[in-house]
Length: 96
Image (cartoon, rainbow, N blue to C red; front, side, top):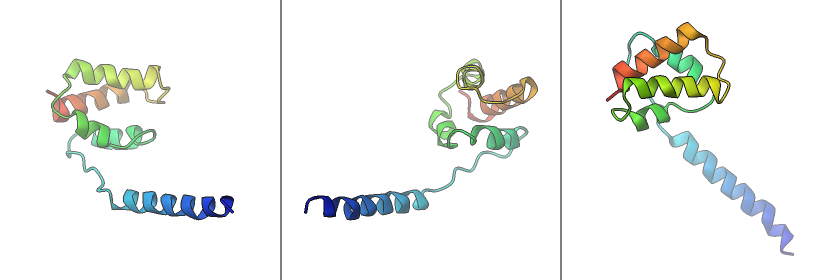
């Protein structure tokens, strides 16, 4: 009898989580040179919330280190020129 309740409960939890996700506001990045590269490359692995969460907290060197980490540690397929443009965009628009 207990097993009969597991599936309906799991379905309700999943439905609630899906509704919460649907209500989230999409992050709108500041329009500037490089924003298209950030949107195209960074969102392949994570949301843009990470950028807003760190806005004003990271220096240009730290943003550069973050972009390098995403490429070297996590395998983000970003070329050298694009990586520089992404780091520059993040530093200029979201740096400390």
